[in-house]
Image 1: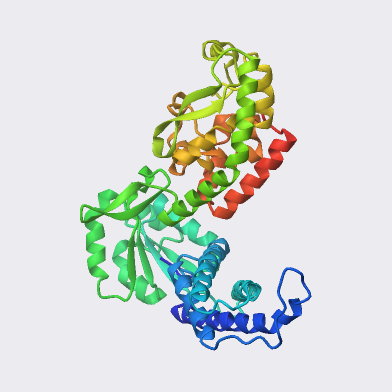
Image 2: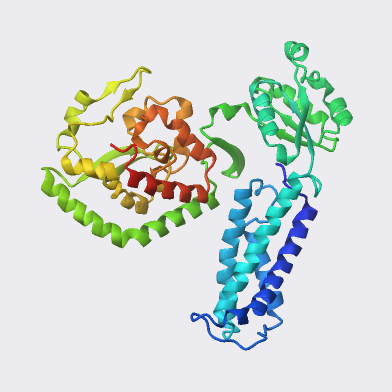
Length: 470
């Protein structure tokens, strides 16, 4: 809906990136002889000569891939993490592509020189964007495109939108007020500028550029009338259906059977984010699998020798979008643990059932060690490979506990469930199910690949400390 910068700024960004790519290649050729003393690189005579056509080919390749990753889309790069993430992924693909160009053409170009070029160009592209963001924030480069917004409907959805806009100050959005046909709201709320009949007058007087319709379904006829009255004004008209109260996390408009429809169960991750997350999961699991298989073999032997029963514990869990799947763990309890559940579970002061307690008498000797080190979770790497879990995400929950969820808690199922997550690195088993849902929703709302990396690193530290696990 809103852009962080103008189309002219996007075109300027393309030109700057092209110049920086060419400059990076020039600086790499100029600096390359200085690295001759290093044992890992070959001596090159000075000066290093770069084929002139590469000063055109490399910038063009880099710009095209930046466009592919929406680096210059002001609507998709509102947050710095989104912009820098897109730029980083584009740089990786650009590097591979340009390396392929060299392989097919100029194989005599120094590999170290090429890597130096990529690093220099990428760093310069990051730095100028960071500087531009600082200058925008200080208003030294002007400001982002200012948008004056009028909200038709002063109900809960309209006010929620106004609060969200007020929290996004850097986007240059300003709500001029509300219009509503409810006399009580007009008389008692100072930001309600009148009834819907005043829409044209307020738009023209306030210089409104965007009109948002946040009316209830009962006002459908009124909505149609207002939209028809605004058709010849230079404003964009947006509609927030009141059905958003029925959504799990967010809604999106999709084409279904050739018709645009509102998807109330739209996943929290875009297809691009899902692809990146899945690729990251597979890369980490496959890289660590040789060591993991060896460790799982040792643990399997220890579990078998420690107590009678199966090596693996299989449990039905609720996954993404409420789908049931079988989750695997190393057995850490006695064989008849389920029959003894009623003796250890209890109901807390909030009326919530707590099924996991410290000093559980059902836990075996080797099971206590596995739980303290979280090694009992290792078989879930197979769940990740199968695609019904991720390395990072909300913890898969037991079906009978999910049946007791409030509607807002079910939003945690809009992303793949994970082996570890935001809750685990901020308390792990110290907090029961009904006290960690808000942590899961924080992850859903702030997902990024970088957040996954941070959680994995913090998980390693939490496991080494043995904090909160039992």
